[in-house]
Image (cartoon, rainbow, N blue to C red; front, top):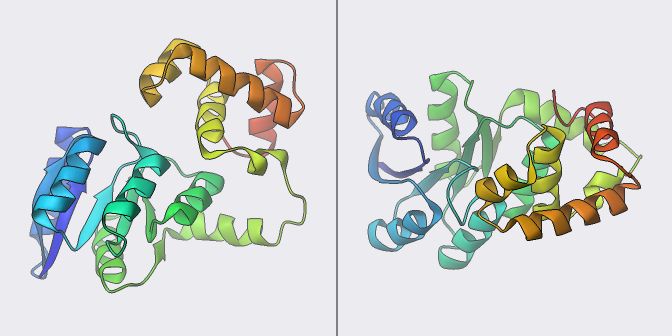
Length: 209
């Protein structure tokens, strides 16, 4: 029996995933978490076989949380289930230690297949993301955004989507001053001067819709 920890800050979504899992005879949900702190506590107390993780939760979250989980439970498979379909974010997530990457618009059967694959030590990436990753692998043009740190990349994507400094600070649980510092470094590393140029850059590289 595959024992699963569901981590997502939306209760309705957690319940929906739980119901999907209940149809599978070989797996069950042993715990739920709505923030990074609860994830780490549940890993220690419940010892799940797999962590089903959303990237956008109260701190710690995202890639930072994946790295923390790897420290606490090095062998625990992490399957990311997110709304973000950018290949660069998927690549960074996998490098941080995730064993799988799925988007929330996928079919329930794909989620169950991914859980089984990852729980056995395999890797699973949604087909559209996998195709983008393969293309990027053979892309010899090292785009500047690949040189951004993980936190800088998180800020970069949110700026590209038009979010303000305050909103980004609340979203990432960091101070507005820290966001502004990251913004300055992002513009500097990408050789850009304005947010408008940043948005055009993100669209040109197909990092946002």
